[in-house]
Length: 150
Image (cartoon, rainbow, N blue to C red):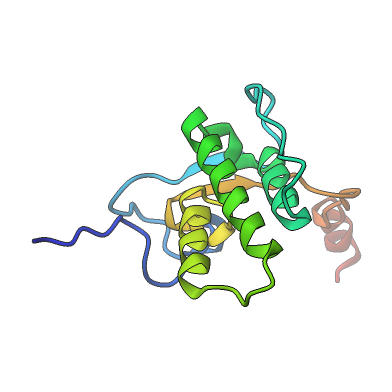
């Protein structure tokens, strides 16, 4: 019997591309970069169940707003609904959380690339849009500084 581990599922979370010092060609698959934020062409997705716990509903709806949703197939959305249902049932019980259920939910959420660490391990980066006004760079002032002799 052999044990196969998915590439990039273990070890420390890799740095983002712009944070890496080594820029030479790496072995393996290239990093896929996608725009952060909701994809423009989402399929008609089922609404969350009205009986779900509030946290499970928020998690499910947050997937629609996430950039990795552009890569989701219908089976991924079905898995997300399943995870939200399990999460909701676990949150609505009076018993303490079951460690195996929590581990299973974390595994499902990791396979859906819901955290940045999961996406980096899968070699996917979401490009964040700059927020707020952009400040001018200092480079236009450099010629004036040279003239002043500073």
